[in-house]
Image 1 (cartoon, rainbow, N blue to C red):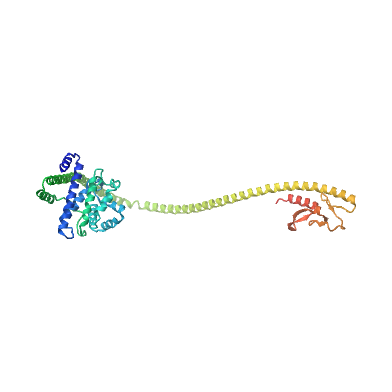
Image 2 (cartoon, rainbow, N blue to C red):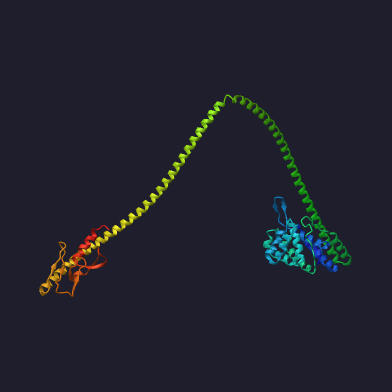
Length: 458
């Protein structure tokens, strides 16, 4: 099976896959060596312990693999601090580590914060849990890593599983005096090569092949890091050459500008000397022009006073105009109100006219009814001979019957004229000028009052 694995490794053509495999193998060896040495040492580990330092360097390279480059003002930037901040969102208890990292006074770069986070997580023995949490959320990691990065592939899950063994280690790391921002993370392959040589002496067959394979992977990873360092240095050299060229051009432009300014200074000096001579000539001619200047000043004062008077008058006119505008607005408002009142009065007039017509119709019907009643009563009284009539006429077609004084039980009195009539002749009710409440009136007074109310405007 080891030989098959060897053939599979040699058959890999993707350099990114080879990098992931090399990093995973280095992580395996680093974690294994750290656990064995810590158990043999039998005490709490501190920051100066070499295997622990190499473990953090290997973890840093694993987290940096496949990071997306973010362009900033200072150039390209790669930092895994943004990915580690996701742990706080997914696991609330990790908020203490993030807060502690942000409160450390000496950290100024995202790389330094990421290194401090790894050390605090190891001391809390939660590094494996936190790594599993973020590796399981590849949808969030895709914002920071390329699709073929170690954290996005199976190798990341393998490393997270290997970190469980570090829970048996007790570490006490002091980060206040440690410069985490400017540390250079270089993997020391010498200790792993020695371990591989020792294992080659103590093992046979498959063990030798595994050691050789690991050493080959480490050497390839070392070469890759050196190549990356050379490329970075070459890029910096190119950038410095470009900056130097740009600065040289700017220096030439600045020299030309200085020469131009010197020429401008000479020209200004010549112009100033010419102006000085001109002023001397003007002073000699100023005595002759003094009287003209005095008259001009006097005229200027008069024009100033006149302008002030005109401005005052203009302010008065503006105030009067504003008052007139205010009066016009009030007048328009009053006209609108009066128009509304006129409309209401017209409506009331129309209502009164309608009421007048109704009253006229009722008067005509009442007159016709009175005539019929008079004729019926006349016929009835003529037959029985027990009634005497007194016709009280107020118009050409109006007459009422007044009963004699002998019949008192069935009689009623008109509240307007005071006459005594039968109940049928005093059946109408109208409000009188002497009384607000409606009173009983005779037929003649009813017709007279209706005509009077109809002729009145309101």
